[in-house]
Image 1: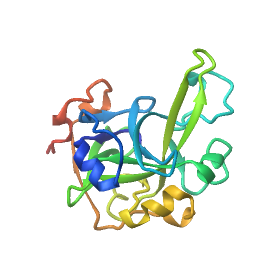
Image 2: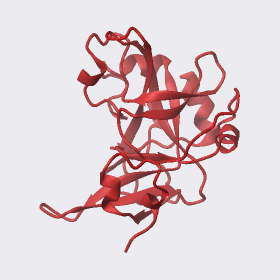
Image 3: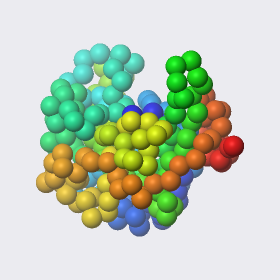
Image 4: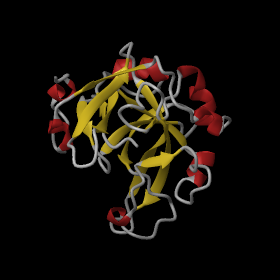
Length: 222
């Protein structure tokens, strides 16, 4: 799974990496993003790549209850994303990419042992490109339009398997067009190459939400 991640990049960096259009945005670095918070999402509502803010946790258009009553939809499993009722329509028609600087996973040494968080990022420092889905929903309480998204997860590669058994699907730039257009299918939802990522242990302070602007959260600890 992917339950926490970071988005710490400039508008120029993310614009150039994803070939975005639109006016420049003032993007604040965030180092501890949690489910239901707003996240940056690359999507193509009119065949052009835009960056929008969306709720992390997909709400399908047919949902008749409140946002708080939505089940945990911040991750979608690659093995079932094309069939699950919450995701199958978006998988066919509304793909997206979630830019990330890195993400966190927790290693457990055994039952009863404290979990050690690790930070994972690209070895070359480039942005990561999580495969995702997005949705447009009308809030039954406020009648406001809500854009939301989910991150697709798959089996961990050999690099991350000692830490956790799942990881986000990370797309390569040459797959962006096929993914966003819907021409590609589940064949893209595979683990990242083993040499792409690096990881290190970080402070357990990341366990608490509310510290998204604390850059020291990604500093390695012994």
